[in-house]
Amino acid sequence: MSKTTWAAMGVAILLVAIGPVSSAIPLCDYSSPRTSLSDLNISFSYQYHQDPYGLTDRNIDEGQLHIDYTRHFDAPDFGYDAAVTNDMNISALSLSSFAMSGQGNLKWYFNPKAPYFALAGATAKSASTYQTIGLFAKLGIGYGRFTDVTPLAKAMEIDDYLVSHGSITHHLEAIDLQSIAHEIDNIGTYPSIADLLSALREIVESSGVAKPTGLDALDIYEMMQIVQDNSHPRYCGGSISAGLGYEIVNAQGEPRNVLATVTFNYAFTTTPQAQFLVQGTFSGAYDFLQTNQMSVQASYDYMISQILDVSAAYAFSRETYGGEPTDQHDISLKVDFTPISAATVSLELHFVHKPYYLKWSQDVSFQIGMKLL
Image (cartoon, one colour):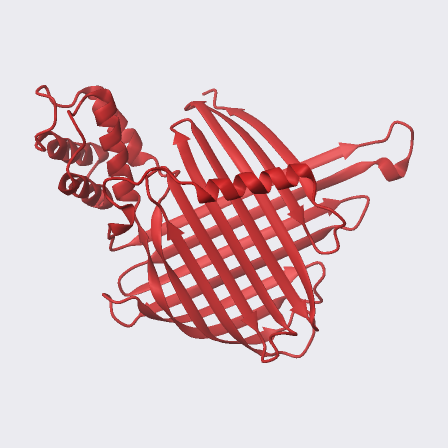
């Protein structure tokens, strides 16, 4: 790999390794009855270049499309998750390629107060290198839960703002932060956002640390902005499941197998500014050393300030057929700068190494967007 690639990998590892100072209340101690998280990322690029010297082998006419969607829901008695990914390279001058996959799982908890669950799921996949669409179904058992701690993260952001603005003399007590988080978590029970803000204002002003004149209009406005900002969800916990599945259709046209599967997820955060997530899957036939599939994804997001956010992600996947493994690596580093609410500047570095590549592909994306009306 080039020096640029190694530098990018070093930054990614550094972002994951370091973390902000721990908060007064551990975010992962917060308990929410429902967790509902979703994320959608879409990127498209296209390049056209005609060689001025008439050399057709130097012409460029290609584009790339990437779609990544995840959905996670968890309640005391049941839960579900879904994921869809699509990577497509379109070229008018050479062979186009694509890789698509989708999976979904349903979970039933044996006891609403316990993290043990039964699992049923299905996976579909297709690629330009496959002979057909692969379809796989599984049943299993697992342990663990995800918890949405975003309400407490927002309560701590409100607390930090009020302290910096001088609206409260010192940080709120843990019980007051928990009360604010509880009300934010139950926003759906309020007739309007104004009613929720009124309840939050009462909690702050009755805490004993508010200034004599109470909260002003700017304080209420900033509290509303924090409550309504859903761009940085925070969650904790994890789960692991194991089971047996059956290949309804083998993507390579080979005999269908009974496969053993293992899946794990883990999320952790220490402050409202940071989020770390790891996900992984493995499936293999009885001769799993000869036939198996595995994937691991890790990501880290850190909000340096309200206008600056950095993130790093790494994904690894391997497919082994007939004892021959094929690996793919994907690294991305992204910086988002939002000087004002209507303008966004983004810089992204993306490095990919696919099977049979002689070297890493390196892409740099710089975008500036502004909302005029």
